[in-house]
Length: 131
Image 1 (cartoon, rainbow, N blue to C red):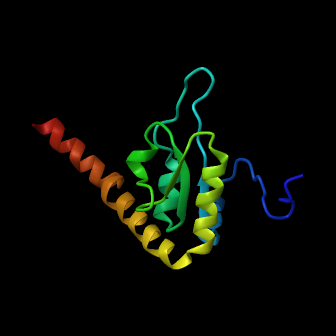
Image 2 (cartoon, rainbow, N blue to C red):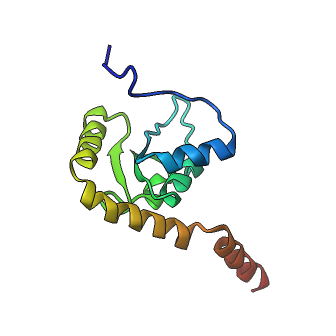
Image 3 (cartoon, one colour):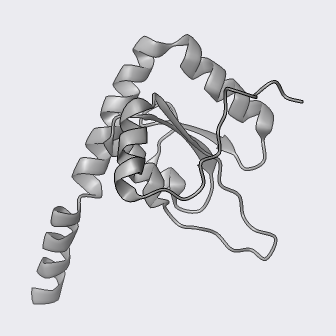
């Protein structure tokens, strides 16, 4: 109906090594999150961090903690929740501006490495505990 046959594949749950392999083969990571009807939200998705650390362009939504990870046009691309038109526009922009996206992907990787690195977070936690 949307003409996506052969272009989009929903893979379901995969082993971690397969996820890493798939991320290495990808160019973009799309994760449009929404607030559930009961108000439930997901925080900062680890999947987004993994994709950004792998050097992918991240496209997501302004949802819960995601804007802490992705700054629109700096470390990825954001659209409002349920705003399909804006989300499609962001994807089109990414497709039309590969050179600009290289800098965004690099900034995203740096952000994850500097602010969400497990070793660094453990060190910060240890400093807090010992104070």
